[in-house]
Image (tube, rainbow, N blue to C red):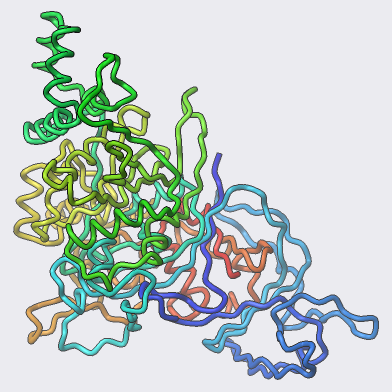
Length: 606
């Protein structure tokens, strides 16, 4: 059963990653106040854009302007069907799979401060299914938290017209902390969200997206100084390395203590077969649980009591104290870069609801959780996890500096892999892999791991050969390499592959990347291009959009009412190539999420 997902541009502003307004948008229900009748609106009819100026309210009682829905009084007539508020549009042909409920005759209008007057023909009843609410933000640049390039991937000597964001005033902290912790590095396409279904978010992960709190972003690896690649590990095939096994064994020995281990061996000795099996086989699930207090069957007291629990991702002072200790003493961040507000926003306010559906007759937890590690009742580590239908997605991991000597980063990773195996999720997503950043290469130490091809969305084994390619080239796409080698097969697929064109098109100077000879060859995308014209890996081209996505029937949500894109009065006059038009905004988002998710999503204005 598919659930709908909602993409939501904010009514008051389109927030960029840094928290500043990119383009304010105000959506209002058509009001029947006399001063707000169509004749009172100053419109300039045009075949492209309609400029609308909201008139001053005629009475103090109507000071809220058009942010309401008022029934007409006895001496007023409803707004007539005019060129601004038309009757229901004629039936249009739909691509297979694009369907929404029949419309209700409810006129709706919203005003856009870009000068567009966007009005709906009609509205449709709101469904009751679980939905995902997001806000498309657009293609933005951030300073890099890995190589500390303040311009991200942008040449420092090239003037950019892209929007600037003051990350110092963002919800979390100054630029370095936010970018380093949450991967806001270089150029990405951004969206924000207030609610996501777990299945929808897993599909986003498999198209190269990640979340940072309520911010969603899809990096442009080809334009980034430190390309970020989605990786995942098969927990069923995972075999920990010697170093990883030793880390877990040493920690278990620390928890149990020498006295407990000796007494346990004396009172309950292993048989010869059991001892041989333990020495030759390493059962990850068994080993991660063997030192937990609840799994000790021998009536002896261990040196320490260890408990590991999955808890809701709620804020507590206990968790924040741990976070503050980790940031200050492990990451060496100054106190003024650490705040409760940022901690709540990014690690305690997940858009994923928690539930326990049944898969194959077995109950499985979905949503966001904190995996809390306590020794003798004291919280010493927290893993922030998104539990999705087919994976455990690691969001963040933090621990108290007192357990740093135990290699708690490895222990946390092994516990999360064990969770994926034990509970049937299978895959463990470790977050983005940044091969160009030496400190981030540790994620590649767990195998077998697979790297998502940025262009084709195929999964390639992250083995020695692929790592050698990443050593010599920051941007690697195995599918694009294959296209370049075989000119006969250099046409991209039009069926949800996300390929951005032929090999020749990818190298065209008219696409995305330009170089400044005075800038150490740092690539700078043209800020005036619409997303699908940039040649960004994995983004649908314009032809693919037209072929695979019926933009006319992308679902909308406006002030609690459902509609479709073609219900917008200005829709037919709007240009798909204009990134500032409503059609351009919707087209960019559709190009970024792909055909399947475009069918599920609902773009919500308010």
